[in-house]
Amino acid sequence: GLQCTAVARRAGGGMSASPLYRLMHLRIRWKLALLIGIVFLIIACFFLIFIPNRVERIGDSALAAKARVVSAMTAANITSALVFKDTAQIAEELRSAMFSRDIRYAVVADLEGRVLASVNYPEAIRCEYQGTPDVGRIVMHADLWQTRERIVHRNTELGDLFLGFSRI
Image (cartoon, rainbow, N blue to C red; front, side, top):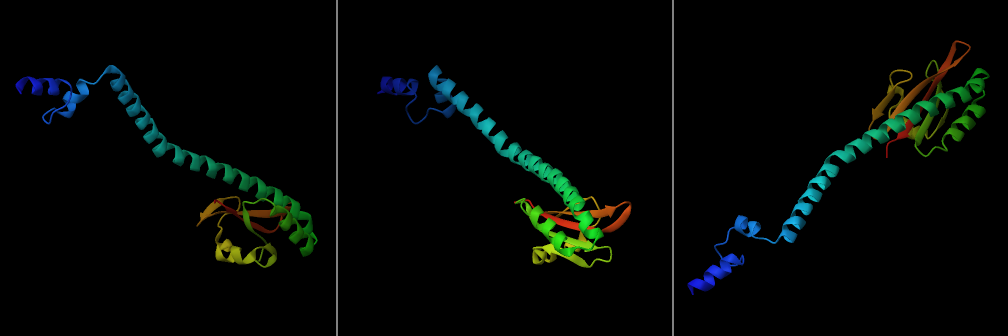
């Protein structure tokens, strides 16, 4: 009776053996496996907490850089058509800019705010494109980055280009 209980306790069995006692009397192989498991768990938690935020920030900064470049290039391409008030050519330039899958809408307006050409205008209205404040800034609206680029020819302001870039 008494001898069997002592043997059971030494082997880690029995009801009264504490978890700490069991842990201390595990074989070295099990202790090493437990330690490696805990280290992996800590590393996994670290990645789960910090990596998604960093990846999102990197993606947002890359999209913002792309938005600046595409806005500037599209504005430059539209300049000559806007000088001659060729709305068909402006519309063609906007359609060619839409090959970038990130762009959800494009609008060209004169300095009075009259729309000269657009692509996906209902989406631009829904996203309140006129509210894009400063020229050259990128602002966030819902799931979009919005840009407003001033179209200038020989120091004469001709109009504005509004683009909406999807973050999704």
